Length: 575
Image (cartoon, rainbow, N blue to C red; front, side, top):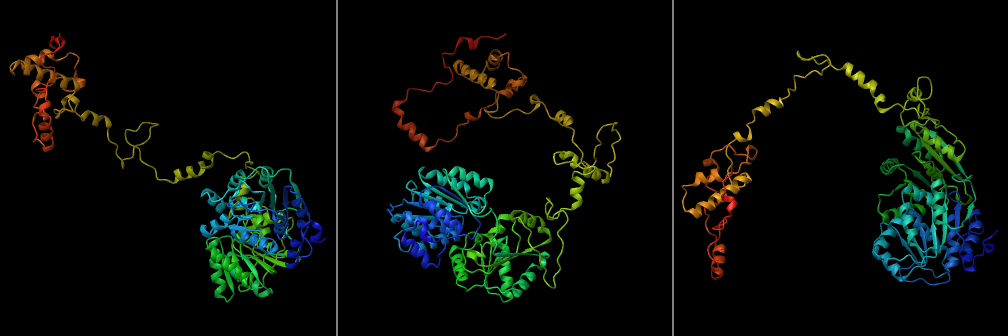
């Protein structure tokens, strides 16, 4: 079978021939005719089988007719990483050189200005990562209501990186009538659920078992201690005829450390991970593809979709935590029918991760030894068949397992019972505290080092409210006394003398005012002291000006209290 029989136009077939391809891969032979008919596709194939060309070639043929509008792309391709998005962009340039299709690449690490200019001119193909696409949409620089074709590539990787919520938002912004192409290397239940939500009556294409490795890749496993991994890696490189190789680490910090170590030993090495600037990452990757760098130490950012021609070796300096990542790592070699080799360095604590990988690929990885280095066994309780965490002893599982005296999975002891024995042991080991002489049986002993104050004695020593000193100021006086004082002052002004002050106060004092108001038993002389407001403060300038300004509008002397119109019930004697 050739590309001529798949329904592609002569311009596309000629571009493919110029790239050096004459026979389509199984995924391309099955996907291209279905995509040309306009039907949704759910493709599942192992890495390195040509999935990228499986959707780029028919898209170029479909988009060859029509014209894009400003800020309204006609197709959208979502990729999980910047490197994979850049590679898809290169594929469109290579296969669409005989078509006048415009494209834009929206990835992080690049200025918004150039990307916005490309969107303003109108693009037929928009290749983007979910985060940067949402940034442009939030700025109002792009409209997605004219997208005819949606491609979600490496969906399982997007699930691992946490991009699925953004992908769901983007799909909600697209028109309902569209063609959706969904590609993934693995088909987990979560991926199946997303496919059911995004696709409409799709054609499912699976050319190989999910998460299977290519038969052209020879896999090997080396078990060494953690401190001997660098020595083992250097010996492997010297023993193999390495043309170029990718060396994968789990952490970005380990990438930098390993690059420095290999550089000190004279290797031509470069580094690549997500914390590097995008321009530096692209430059390093181009140098590696051009052969200027022999060994590229990288994190999993380079494990998805990167098509590096004739890559001879892949070294896993760390065993991947997720078994699916192993399939994608070693899939960088042995592509397009070529042969490749993959070596994995495992520490004694990595037994359970190796077991997960072997379970996923369905076969054991052959173990090899390196001359001069010991091959330790996997740690107990963390071996290939164990479920415990790192460093967990085998006896711990036996004691808490389902054997004698143990409990089953559903019979875990309560939290209090789990800690009862250690607490009891700590109590017995602690020094005894001597009991107080007056301590009765069953009561808690008192510790002399921390004497407690007697709250009752403190309360008894505090004086009652009526025994305290007189309150000063009008604000702190009881409301009843202030009212009585106002009445007394008004009456003395009306009668013109202080002679009857005491009699009036005795007559006007209400019966219901008691000790709870404060000052009920105080003498009248203490309750009626000169008020604070009676001492006149110096007159301020703005008050004097205001008084002079309204002098002609004054209605007479101010009225204090009730004046001559004192109600009769206030003068009535009580009791």
